[in-house]
Image (cartoon, rainbow over all chains, first blue to last red; front, side, top):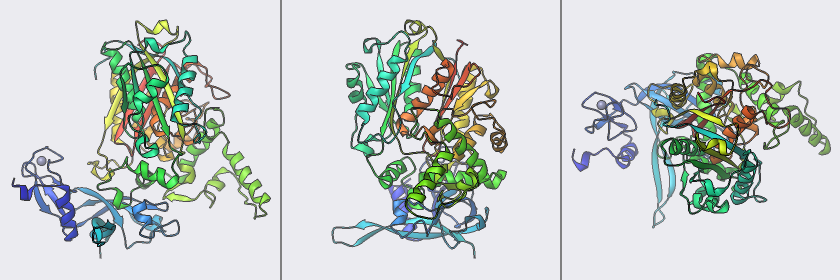
Amino acid sequence: MSEENLVTVDKYFNFLSEKKLMGSKCPKCGNIDLPARRLCSKCISDECEWFELSGKGVLKTFSSIYVGAKAMTQKGYNRKKPYVFAVCQMDEGCSVSGQLIGVEEDKPKEIPFDMPIQVVYLKTRTGEDKEGNPIYRWDVGFEPQK
Amino acid sequence: MKKLNRRVAIVGAAMSKFGINYPRLRSIDMWQEAWINAVKLTDKGISPKVIDEFFLGNFTADLFNHQGHMAPQMADLVGLTPKPASRFEGACASSGIAFRQGVMSIASGVNDVVCIGGVEQMNELNTEGVTGALAAAADTTYEYFAGATFPGLYAAIANAHFNKYGTTPKDLWNIAIKAYENGHENPFAQEQHTLKEIMENKKNKAIKRGKPVPEWKDEYDFLGSRSNPMIAYPLRLFDCSLITDGAACVFLASEEDAYKYTDNPIWVSGIGQGSASLSLHDRNGGLLTGLNATREAARQAYEMSGLGPKDIQIAEVHDCFTIAELAALEDLGFYEPGKAATAINNGETKRDGIRPINTSGGLKTKGHPVGATGVGQIVEVFKQMRGIAERNRQVKKDIKIGMSHNVGGSGATVVVNIFTKEKI
Ligand SMILES: [Zn+2]
């Protein structure tokens, strides 16, 4: 595998910033991992290649969080305005965590398990560079399928 | 799982008072208190001279107190230098791991007598700071920016359990109510009030301040009210364990040496440790209603001891949240998945039940000084098996077989130990 195509965390996040959901696919056993891994999580083959996912899946579990992580309280979430942390399984079989948006966060009982979701790309300001320009990171998020 | 090459016994064990001890007491003070108490509970006494090695559990004094390199610091305070002193880290299972390493060091023949410590001083930071430090036990790369918090991860497990088995908030509150009943009987616990007393105190405060006095029919009514705010649905404040400062200490000896220190050694008959991915989403196969690492650690401990879940008479399980106790009872094999709630409702896990769970009050009321928790649990099992648990919490029947279960983070590290009075 060339250095250019090597599966790394930095490249995974760079793809997210381009709004591309890139996992890794194992040519030996066909397993797909998300987030992408250099070694296949099933057979530990080291030949995994980048693989673009459909971005569609289902909601496996979640929590409406009222006392949030700092990264979220900085975005304005609080006791009166909770956010949803979710684990979703993609149609390709792999699972990933993300914020679930487009639902009534304060009515968790009404958010259905196994609801079809699609991936969205969420931006967080994490600091600024030497020139004072904002630095962002991009993360996987989910919303109900339309 | 092979048996230990030679047998290992607990000859003494004790803890400091758990609580909001900082700034009155710091790690240095609490560790010395735990050591002094453990020497007192070693029947024939013990001296640092006979101890071959020191194993310390501490999660993150680095973040809580800007203190790394803690093992020699603690060893020096109790006369253990220049013996080997090492710190072990596995989040809230740190001292559980340290204990297992100490057991194996004696079983291997390298050591004859060792000391295991656990210490954590958390209240130096405010709640936001503590939450941030604890978040380091989850996956910073992929989970944190998804909004995961420590309660949030367990809440996601609880929600999955509710969805699959029909578990309810009331099922979890039964666990909390029991924890307060037991903590009331433990002079070393952080929270020694019963829930009824806490409700009375809240009423009295309201009267004093001239505010409307809340009326609750019973504990359930209180736990379902606004006085018990939602933290991460479905977990509320009273589903969560405490932020605690504390230390705990255990002395272990080989079968040849044990009787020098006591006529009644408690044998370590099974040990197990399991692991899982740090992030919940990577637990492939998707066991979201419990912890695979608990199942693996328990499998090892059962196999080593030749015992099964039915043999365990008492257990301290890792109840960092009420749902964690419920899931542990199922993952340890005491009940089928989805069946623990009914057993809890029937009182089976109370002090007078068929298998008392967390007689100490558990992490919920005894407190959860994360790096000291694993050894703190062993202290309670030791006391119950010796028949010396304080106040009214000593279980009436003779406990011949006990267990401790210690979890790191949201279940990526788990340690399970089985203790017996007989050398089996
Ligand atoms: Zn593979």
